[in-house]
Length: 288
Image (cartoon, rainbow, N blue to C red; front, side, top):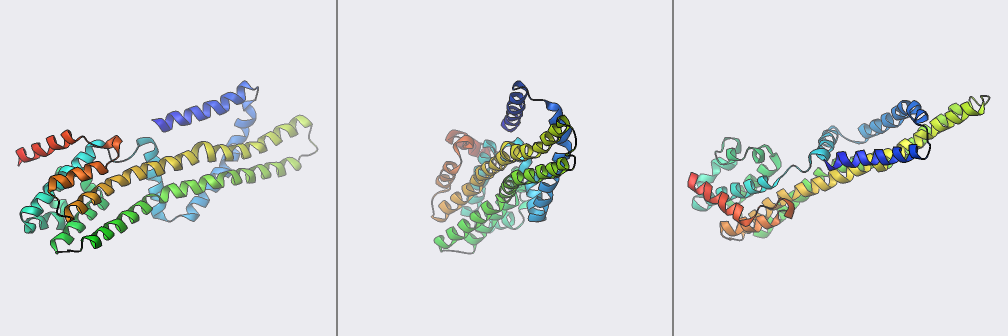
């Protein structure tokens, strides 16, 4: 919602101020389709040339996230803590019983209670791989911590590819606007024998290219890139919460303590309260 409001305010203030100052929209509306085709087409072409298919797909999803917000909500963090509480209790009681859950999470009755988490390959892989290391008596806690840290760094780097791609596009748009404007000036120079009122309109149309490139860069695409980076950074806390919980458990803390440590890893905006988590865990125990 904030993204939509921000875009509307930006457009309204820019064009509203132009109209109030006595500007004529006819020049802009006449030149906009052609300038937009040159600038937008060149920007998209450069984007496709600079990025692989995976990054392109991620960027499309990133643009959607600008309007939807971060993927993980408060309920998802609570579900994660409940999931980990169940898994670690099974591991504590009998390590053999945990194997079916981590070897085939899609068939696990524990994971099945939390479908949104189960659909996230990175989260499930981190949980299962680390618990598998525990079962294998991977006693070097610091080495497991280093592996988790490397995995988290890799996840964060991958998640920001879309933001970097959008920022690169934003950086290129003013220059592409100048390209379109220069082409407009070339067209105008070819009609130098025309009356001043016609030449004025043609020069104004050429300058629309410069305006459009700068406006898109700093008014639309740049803010989108920043919002994507913010969303992906916040989403990364979900995986950091998993890592913090598993590391706490590796240090032989009780399951409840590990869950509380993980709860405090969550950003304040989406952090479930201690009472909410306790109540959810109690309900799980009753259902069992």
